Length: 79
Image 1 (cartoon, rainbow, N blue to C red):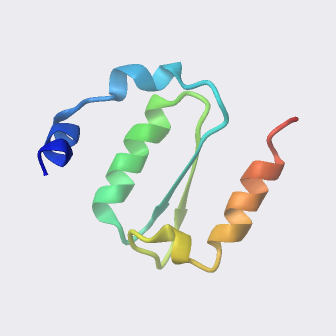
Image 2 (cartoon, rainbow, N blue to C red):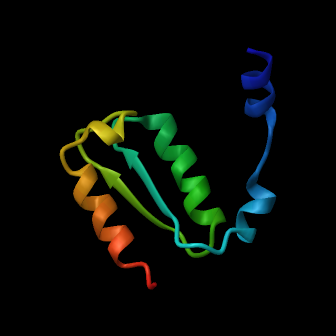
C-alpha cells in the first residue's frame, strides 16, 4: 500500500513532453476520474491522441470496440 500511496503523490506532468512515441490515451466515458487523468496525459504528451469510449467505465479493455480502436491505432504507426 505504501507504494500505491507514493505513486499517488507523484506528479509526472513535467516529464510527459519527453514521450515522443505514438501514444493512444483510451478511457471509458463513465470512468469520471479516469477521464480527468486521461486529459492530463493527452495534453501533457504533445503527440498523443485520445479517445473516450461511450457507455464504458474503468475497464476499457472489456469494451467490444476496444480491439478495433487499438488495431486502428497500431496499424497507423509507420514502420
